[in-house]
Length: 107
Length: 119
Image 1 (cartoon, one colour):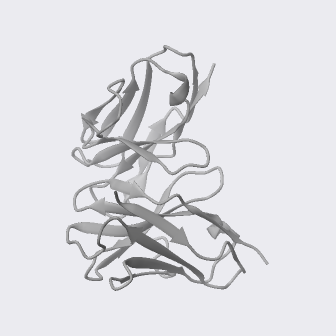
Image 2 (cartoon, rainbow over the protein chains, first blue to last red):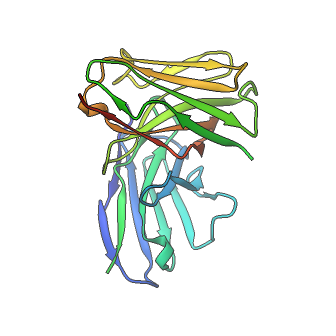
């Protein structure tokens, strides 16, 4: 199985801050990497696919980068609606796997 | 617009079989190029992929659950189903039905249904 390691597991930030979350794959996955946002009681929402492609309708404050084993999700200016848990997800090989999540909280 | 809706018992006894169905609307489950699957999330924890199936019945399962999981498809009803046998409290989770395209990440999610394993 390809293990996905996210860091940090949680962070506190203020409105307007720039936030970066990292995800490392235990083996190379090319760009088969997606990012999701999940709020309590809701299904995850897709933000990024193919490591850096923005899902339709997702604001441009979200961006993704990386290839191979190291990936990042950046939120350029954190807004109140962005406080949530973020997951990376590799879909390059079975079994599909997810990172452990990063909870973004209000400072 | 594609919609996925999970249904099934919210409470299952230990050692019994968990059975869930996902009803697809706004699209045909028989369309080639898609996988229909299940992901679960224990309360307060992360996401675990269970497995998926395509319209012709070809399946892939998570090795950690493979011995207990069966995913099937009913094209006449535009539904697919999950069976997880010999459940324990560790199988308590919100179960999501999902769709993904070939070579694509999970793109559509159901709202999720909580299944609790308890006597």
